[in-house]
Length: 218
Image (cartoon, rainbow, N blue to C red; front, side, top):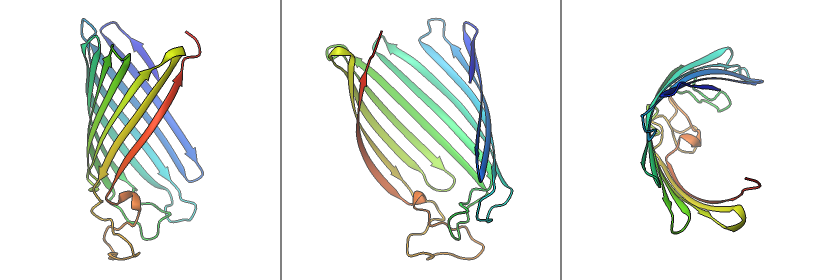
């Protein structure tokens, strides 16, 4: 990824390639950032494209392909010297091979559309020398796996350059419209979409974690 700054705006271009025995993915993107005169606000516009080639080792998917486009618009605003908020809206559209060739009878739609809204808020607390980090994401998927995610973290500065950051995250997801619970292959009808992939099931998760950081030098 390369970024060039032009004073009141910046342009970034990026490329990526991933090659495996049964999968080849190539992607490119371009992003424009527009800065306000006081540098307290940044608008971001982005476009990305991906081309995938699938050749599963079991012979189920041979010379299959998948192409997609991603669009993003976002804003980052400094509310004060101690608070900042960021909000991004993204839209994904793709067509091609979405089934999992390594899962028996897995047959998914050949088109997918995803809309996601992500908002983050950081508030520095001088009295505690810490930062409260909040985040929320709402996602709508044409497969039906619509989801909500809420997370909170507290980045606490400690003596000797240490930082302690506990985090809690709650995630909930609807099942895909073509997902069927066990026993396999209940619900399967020839010629209709079907998947028993549990990643497409309805579920919720509560995750906790902690990160310890240390500054090694200035």
